[in-house]
Picture (cartoon, rainbow, N blue to C red):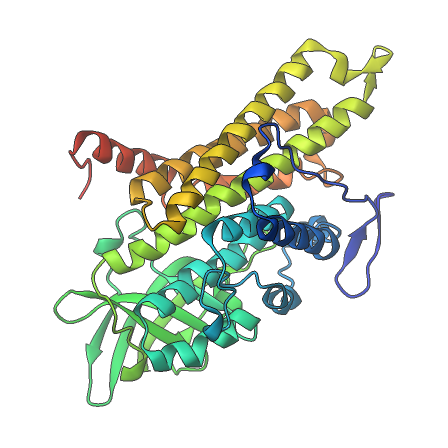
Amino acid sequence: MSPNTLQGAGSGVKSSRTDLFESPDFYRIDDLLTEEHKLIRSAMRDFVKQEITPYIEDWCQRAYFPTDIVKKFGEMGAFGPTIPQNYGGGGLDYISYGLIMQEIERGDSGMRSTASVQGSLVMYPINQFGSEEQKQKFLPKLASGEYLGCFGLTEPDHGSNPSGMVTNFKEMDDHYLLNGAKMWISNAPEADVAVVWAKNEEGRIHGLIVERGMEGFTTPETHGKWSLRASCTGELVFDHVKVPKENLLPGKSGLGAPLMCLDSARYGIAWGAIGAAMDCYYSARQYAMERIQFDRPIASFQLIQKKLAEMYTEITKAQLLNLRLGQMMNEHKASTAQISLAKRNNVATALDIAREARQIHGGMGITGEYPIMRHMMNLESVITYEGTHDIHLLILGNEITGIPAFN
């Protein structure tokens, strides 16, 4: 066991390294936040310091998903913070949601994936497209963490082209018969419910709520991941699954429905990725101040200062981008392309910062003594999911030219 770890009570190996993180705020963005925003951020930061950062290195080393974190997230209001309070949500604005995602991903991208899938990809479509009965049945249990949910869109042969999906359902007398498979699904192995997108007999895409225990519905786990190791990932397999007709989302059909969900999730990722970047910057700065070489701290050398200054600059730019995007989200004026720009820019920025931070840490940067390599590996997934880096570039290209590069 490392000298910087000790045995925790039930959650695994607990790090003895104290988490003293404070976020950079060079342009005094806090002055633009409300007191409620700052209280929400502070509460989530304290939660992450107590419930995630002491254990996350051990969880990732063991590829272990801590199922008890689901209920804890529910108690903290991390699930569906923008969902109305009468359905168990927080009734908060989008800046609050962004700050929550930022703090959770500062702890770990996999932990943020668990929360953002629940809120943006499961609760959001039920709230937006579901019947009143569906909202009353599912949203409070998802908000509290009694239920864990997942979102089934990506298929083995259809990732960036979801319209090509082959998962389908047929209308029977009193139910729908669902067949097909989805893969790379966060939360799937532990999920109680899945919002699944499938084509009807006319080829129109609809959302269905599939529940754990329905005959023919299985969720095999994906093993061997080098990324998001504390997040559970799996497949959704549907073999003649009988889905009650009341489980069809009635409010919207067509590919636009799941894409609306992805917009909500991508917005949260834009904030979350900068949380990871902040953690890498903070660790690099602390290490550079403490690490002595040639009889002086390495923070005194020009090349180290250059790296830190560039990290600081890029984080500040991303913070301002997120804040403005959050304001537009609150006004219901943010477009898909604007959300794509933020997701693409901020994840790439975070990955660059993680790589530079690894250089500053030298050999220590590859160990679990510091969070750098874990963040770097996680961000390699984040830059791919919810639309790859290149797909978001083409979304922006279409916005600029009016000419789509893909159908």
